[in-house]
Image (tube, rainbow, N blue to C red; front, side, top):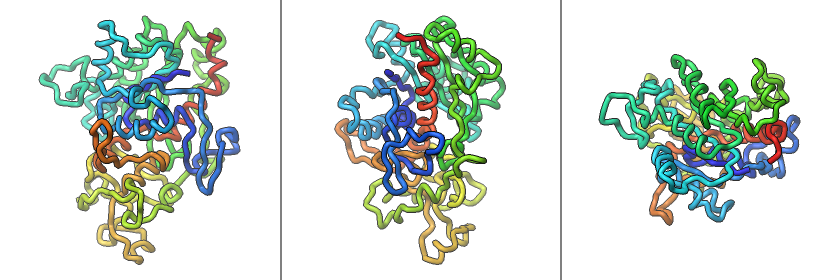
Length: 408
C-alpha cells in the first residue's frame, strides 16, 4: 500500500508504519501479537514488515531529511528522492498550478501536523498561531490560513488532491482541551474531497500502554474515504460505539492485566556512559547547567518508571539522566560510584522514543551538505512519533484493511 507522509520529521511514524525495525522485546506483547516478531536477539526483537511503503515524505527541516535519508537509504534505493524539503503550503500550491508533485494511486496519508500551537508547553494560540508555515513570525497579527496553527487544513488539501483510502493525523493531547478545536478539526477533515471522508471521533493514545517507555499522550484522527468503504464498514464506523472488529484504534498491549509497562531502565540501562561509548549518538549530551527545580527539564528520570515526554526543545530543557545529591539526585548507587551529573544523551532520548539503534542521529556533513548536531538531533527526536506506537497503529489498520475496503 503506497503511503504518503507529511510533516515527516526524522521518520518515527514512517519507521513504525513500515515495520522491519529492531526494538525492545519488552515493547512487544508476544501473547497478543505472536506474529509481530520475526527475529529475537537478547533483549531485542525485530518486528515484521507491514503492507505499507512510504513513497513520499516531506518536511521543512534539512536536518530531519538528512537523518531520515541516512536511515532509509539502506532500505530504499531512492530515499533521497522520496523526501521533499518544502512547506506543505508550497507543495499544494505547486500541485494546483499543474506541477506533478504527489505520486499517483496513494492508499494512505499520514501526518503529524505541527503541535506547538496546541501544546500545554506553549502559548496555546491554536488556530491563531503567530508563526508562518515556514516557522517564522508572521508580519501581521491577523490569523492566516497559512499560519502554523492551520497547517492541518493544508494536509486536508493534500488528501483532496491524492484521494487516499485512509488518512491518519496526529497531534498533542493538549489539542483536545483547547475550546472546540478537536471537533473543528474533525469537521474540517471530513470535508476533504467534497465531504468524501468519514472521520471517526479522535482519541488520545497513552504511549506506555503500547510498549513505549515514555509518558507521551497523542491524539489520533482517522479518516476513511467513503466511496472506497464496504457498506458494512460504513455502518460499523458510523456507529456510536465502534465494535472491536472495526475499531481502527489499536488495542492496548501493556499495563493492568497485560504485559508490564516498559521502564526507562529497560530502555537505557545497558548503555555505557558517554565517555565509554563508541556510538556518536551516545557520546553527546547537553552540557546546559542545572537551572533550578522551578524550570522545565531540570528533573532526573526515574529508572523504574516510564520516562518523561521527550520534548523538541533546546539543550536546557533536556531531562537529566542523573542529578547530583545537591540538586536532589536519587540514584544513590550511581552517585556512590562517582558518576557525574548529566542530562540524557541523544541516544538515550532516541531509545525512550523507541528508535532502533541503527538509526544514527549525529551526522557530519552529508552529500547534501547538511550536518546534524546534537542540538538538531534532540529537536527532531522530540518531534517524532514513537516508532513502536506508530507500529501498533499500522498493524491495527493492516489487520482490518480488507474488512474496511472494497477490492480494487
